[in-house]
Amino acid sequence: MSDAQPARPAADRPSAEAPWPVRVLSGKLKEYIDRLGSVWVEGELAQWNVRAGNVYAKLKDLDQDATLDLRVWSSVLARTSDEFRQGDRVVVLVKPDFWVKGGTLSMQAFEIRHVGLGDLLERLERLRRQLAQEGLFDAARKVPLPFLPRCIGLVTGKDSDAEKDVLRNAQLRWPEVRFRLRYAAVQGERAAADVAAGIRELDADPEVDVIIVARGGGDFQNLLPFSDEELVRTAAACRTPLVSAIGHEADRPLLDEVADLRASTPTDAAKRVVPDVAEEWARVQQARARMANRVTGLVSLEIDRIAQLRSRPALADPAWIVDSRADELLRWTTRGAELVGRRIETAESRVAELAGQLRALSPRRTLERGYAIARRPDGAVLRAASDASSGDALRVLLADGEVATTVD
Image 1 (cartoon, rainbow, N blue to C red):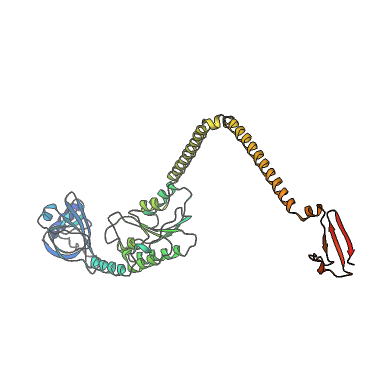
Image 2 (image 1 turned 120 degrees about the vertical axis):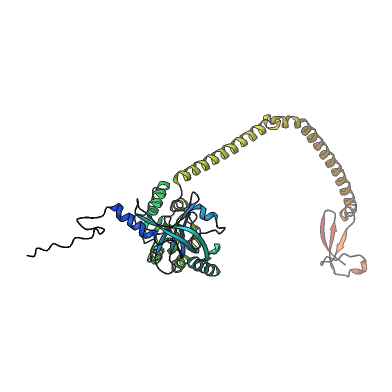
């Protein structure tokens, strides 16, 4: 065995026997990072949150999936007149800052400038214009939601806050509501395809009356899948009424534009899809109360009208009409009888007069004075003796009868 001892590590190098304390490593990291100094970096703003005048942002690489946390103090913003938002393409003068106590690395911005519209925002705007020209955003395409859906299809992340918000608020409003859950990835590369597949699956289910696509809030980059063209076209082709509940009020992906209803949050979606049983019961009670008041008012009005009619003299004592007209009726009856009798007497006298005239002109009266009428058998009257020949049979009409005779 050799007596030679192993070489000891240098005093400034750590080892298992002589490790560095955390503060030493942190201090050396800070010294190394500080030597980098300030550098200009280009990227796209994936997040832009203003808090108390300062901005906490995320700077995304334009081509690769790389992101840096960025702090912009209010004093830096005060030196520029530009306004920034998610999706803007910028160049930033940053200085890496390592926080020893927390062990975190961030970038402090000393200057920020626009370099043009961000690639993502430009692509989304181009797609938005294309879909709008195709009419997929038209209000005429949107269909109304059913008043009380029998079954609600929900596309959301498994065990997500959005799922809990929708289920809880819907069941609070209508305890008997039923859901058909379709879990899907709501961020990442496969989110758009997964959500589109969920919409198609629920749209094919005949029991589903309305579909809700729900996701909680997030930054601009996390909500990009809900502006995917395939997903948007799938939603536009959906025959079942579709509700989009993505992010918060300020978030507006393209899915919101083609959906039949846009809800500001998942909670808002539950409130707008499911009616409140307490509110509906209150409306029923109010309607019943209005109907009862209306019927009561109509009955009371008719009772008052009947009472007014009954209080009139004609209905209060109807016999007065007969009594007041009895004498007048008697006078007219007597007058009528007198006039009728007079007319009858006049008519009888006229008839007797005409009868006398008629009797005076009657041939029978002539016969009664001793005259007779000779007629041939055929009824012809003889007016001269020469009209008869010897042997002619004649019939002689007398006042009280008729005799047959023959001419000699």
